[in-house]
Image (cartoon, rainbow over all chains, first blue to last red; front, side, top):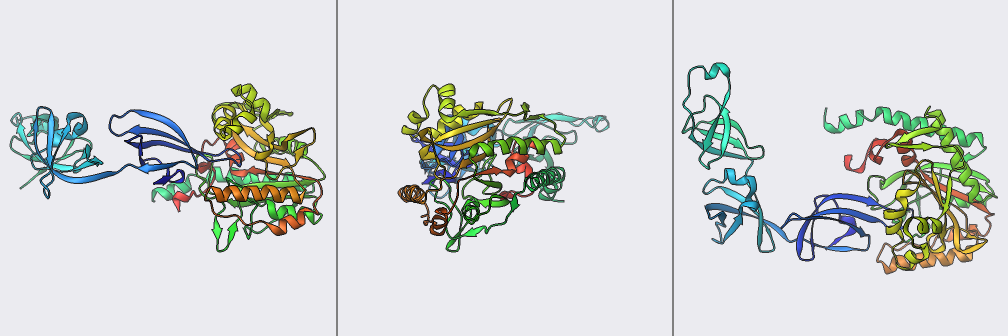
Length: 187
Length: 308
């Protein structure tokens, strides 16, 4: 249970059965009266938002959220399958829930899956992932002079700009937060 | 340099202006023959209030306001007193709240709350003058004209005008604060400051009942641009009624499961000797916000709790 005094930006609550995250928070207190806690809340399942003012006597249920390390197995018909390596339990996430992380989901990649009660809600993947370049135009004379980047396609099908010297079959490190090339990885 | 050091370094101009404001306030009161006092910050029993939570300090408390000791000085015959001090209220943190903040509190023996309203008009106009802001200035995009008299509106009038409900109705529905904050305050103190006067008796624990309307107390709050700046009242000097109101507050605190508040016995003893008086607490940090066009209280103090 949380009290009103625990409310702050980022806190996750369970309201009417759904998990919510506080996206904006302000404390107001008129004169010597009761404190009021103005919150903007976002539903963590469907993304809907609303504003509500709570009072100091209100109490709240914690949203039972857990992160579990799981391995990406495969994608089928728009669903992404992950497995817990200890229990062999499998869950599916939709493309919406996976979001941009889909660009970096290599087979066997270990990801953190966010659960609300027993329901998978979302995913966070490592900040850096090493991936193989599947398709690239061959390096041509003059490229190094212009110094331009070129687009290549990675093993997941993700299109990314890399320096001209990167060739097909190279392994590169990608920052999954920005989606950008970091460096070539030598094995 | 670290981010915290940059943050502190960036506050130099703001802290200079704060110093100028404090100097102007002191000069204002010195010129009017007020005595500046320093009363203890750590006390055995603050005035019990349902919604003000003092920090414990051993078996005593850090004072949430200097009123208890200042009124004991009044009872001992002091006539005009002021104090600028740190006050402490647990759980109060927001854009306009710090759990440790600075109050300017002053008292006038033999006067009522109307004298304090006049003090506010003169004090803030003088201080703005000293900062070369002139009579009109801008706070957060809103023009404020300090030419007296400022607007005076009763709580009842304000609720009727801005919500269509009476203060008694919303009080009975236990929605007073909520409606005040959401629907009334956003209209107060625009164009010129507003005194919101004559609070329903249950909301004025230490204030005197108004002679011509016993349902309200002679308490007011000063607003500038929707922000509450000060809370003043004609002091209740009847120790029996004061004890009864404290007992109610203590019982309500217990009912809500809050830290129990002891009865301030030595204050009640002295209250029987206190003459008619009026006193007011003004949030100094908020006055600095208004006079320096700061949106958040964080901008007018060197340190916030989060930086410690």
